[in-house]
Length: 180
Image (cartoon, rainbow, N blue to C red; front, side, top):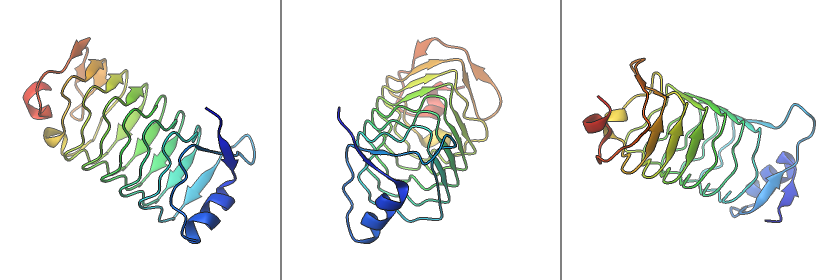
């Protein structure tokens, strides 16, 4: 896929001007340090299939965002609202997310590999057919209301500190029925 690259400043300016569809973009990194966005409302933005590798987001509102197939490899998110967002088939390898609200988010087919979702709100999050490998959900809340039908679990750290060694496919619709 050929990306159209924008700087974070260009993205924010176009968003403030009313543009919401940024499907297939890539963000230019201003330096080796990467991109850090703070205190921005990007609710409803379309970043499907975007290249956001190594991005840092703090106190960002991405409620209802479209992030299908987005590369968030090596991303750092703190206190980000991703409720009602669509992260289906996103690549979340080696991510560190803290205090993220994923309530009602779609994460079908998403890859969580060596990632941390610490203190995340997982109320009604849909992990159907997702891959959760060597990742942690420590401190996550409302996990009993998320869905994991057909998800593949291998060495997953659970909110209570226990480890689901797997390997196995989860075959129950609600987390509280299978992750005990």
